[in-house]
Image (cartoon, rainbow, N blue to C red; front, side, top):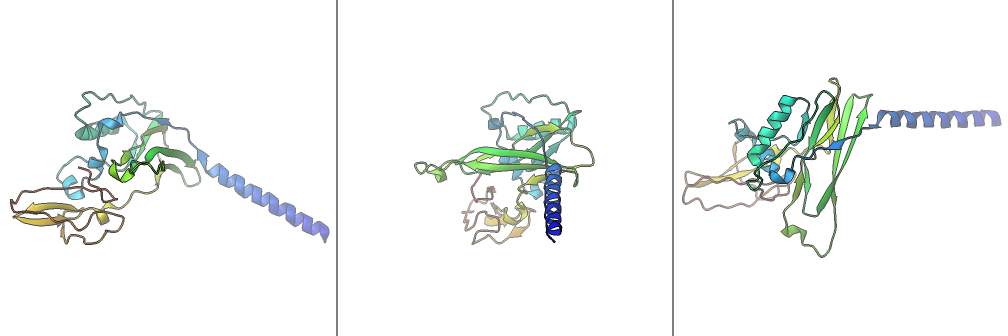
Length: 240
């Protein structure tokens, strides 16, 4: 009886160790390099928050999650973000990337001005054929600083990793919010205030915070009939 108990105990420990080892082998850390694109020279959130109805008209935009795997895609990325360049930056030099051996990943993340850094992690899951890129905001908490009075901090967190196999997909953590539920633009048309959603449909202005954050209770004087548009981030803060 004792031998049987010992045998079962040993078997349990072996299986437990094997399962932990198997899990560890599935989650393989991936080394990455930061890619400096002089991000302070761009207001990228303006491009990210370009609504779908403006995108359909050809207005430049940028996705919150990026996988750049070719020279052509990298050139297009540079052209796109140049539309949001800070005029104080006369010249911006983008680093060269060898796409025969590397892939670029980007994940927009942001917070209040309490954000001081971003924790980035990449790992490969061969069982699922996934590359997982996680970005977390690291914030400082100083009781002497009025964070609500300063501008939020955002970053596209562009990194270079070894070339991703063609049959692998990229998973971003946390997933980007669905802007179609929270985005609203406010303007004047024919002397009246008009509220439009992400797809350009006219909707009633929100009188309470929309799902996922946003802006509400907006009123505009449209006596002049001039069109105006305001964009807000998921926290309801105006960004243009």
